[in-house]
Image 1 (cartoon, rainbow, N blue to C red):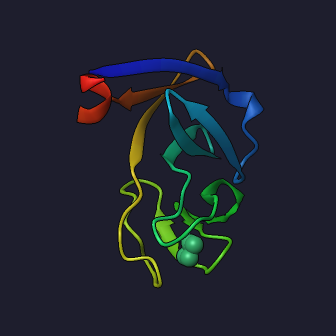
Image 2 (cartoon, rainbow, N blue to C red):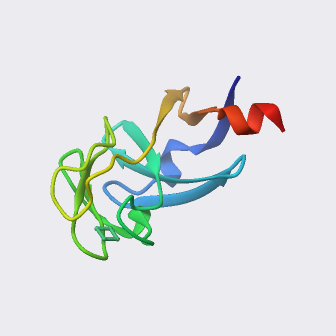
Image 3 (cartoon, rainbow, N blue to C red):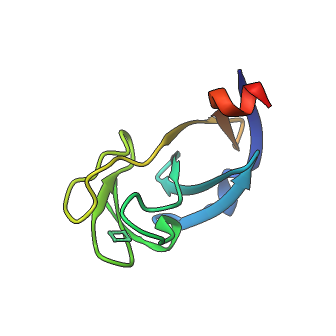
Length: 111
Ligand code: FES
């Protein structure tokens, strides 16, 4: 089951800095790069840190706690200490508004 939600107008996303949103029980970090918005899980896969507070380089975000970088397209870590990916979410910009698609996990569908 998927759910597509309107998040905000594109012009409310500052270029190159993260915005943390909580949607349907998911904590998500969103980043605007040009006219594209990327969305990944906000919790670093290494320990408790908010990726929305990280710095963006090209299409990677650097965890503010220990410095692992994550690809914003795939969620894969690009450097240690993180070794596991963070989830990625589909986004779309339609008529200047940013939409986010959430896929429910098996647990959420069952509950
Ligand atoms: S908490 Fe992110 S790299 Fe350690």
